[in-house]
Length: 461
Image (cartoon, rainbow, N blue to C red):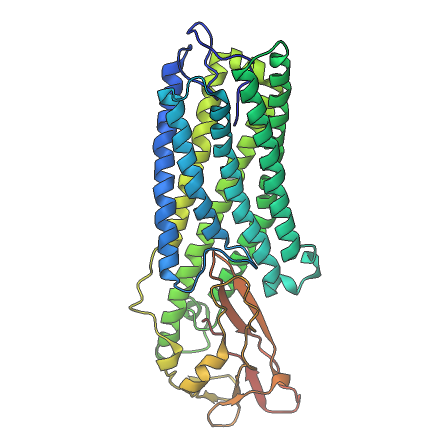
């Protein structure tokens, strides 16, 4: 936030500190210097965490590019801009604590304004990535209720307009306020008062837009991730399914599904972490920007009362500086939790895994199922998108094979007929790159008189 409400700078300890622009030679300066000291350490932690997480994500995905013309790498863009925001926060806090540039009010106003502007741009970049990702998810494409989501051009226009409008208004206000502080005239007090009102109103509206964006679209992102997690938990062969089903004997189920369950368990843990990470990030952004919106709106119209009351000033100084930093620390912790590696000792790939025969029993007619896995066919069951959020590659390379169970004794066959198969694809986005899994729906036989049944296989890349 830029400057305080008063049109002059306090130079005597008999006056309360204008803690947004100066915490030296004023009443309560020790408290406000401690506030900015804690803010400095929190900013350093966020700065180092952002650098480490960004480098780690780029290292893990060698083909990932930080800058993309056709899309937004939401999490990477957020971490990249967080580096600049945290550095600016450290620099501005040191200026206030050490009283650097004591008479350069224009410079002080610009530096302090840039710290909050970069923070808004950082979170807006992440939100733009969320808006870019959701319309590309097949789960939402199949619902007309979500056709109001903007396309890439609309997202880019909104993002650029938001950054430009916010940047132009805030910089102009900061420069003009600093100028009238440094070169006061007869009308400086009135001009500064009006400029501060415009500035805080603009900042309040910008934080309100971010809050609404995360309440609507951030919750949608968390919702689809949770839906994908529930779908994965319901996949046949998942470790929890043997406890719920009584169709097979315990020993037969363990021998049949031990291989596929191991891989599904690893995928489930990864997806579960991704869902938790997104919930933490979304909740932190909503709480942080909702609180800032209230503080900025109050400062726009009650700034004189706030700065004249030392107790209210102390509370708002601590809340406005520590709350965003503490929630940013929570975001970094959530991202780090999502990046933790899961032991791959139990992770088995379909390419080298052969499923044994499974004998099923029924009250009427016994069925025998044998699924033969061919390594060359493993790749046809799924197709992973590349690391870019702009991949237009099909999610299925060709119609997925369908296992056919015959009521007569024999082995199952793979049916590649597209007429007997439907597939639905659900993309769960924790962060870039996208995580995709495909579920093939169970279909009844096309011929009602046939003795054969169709059953599908759900696989996870």
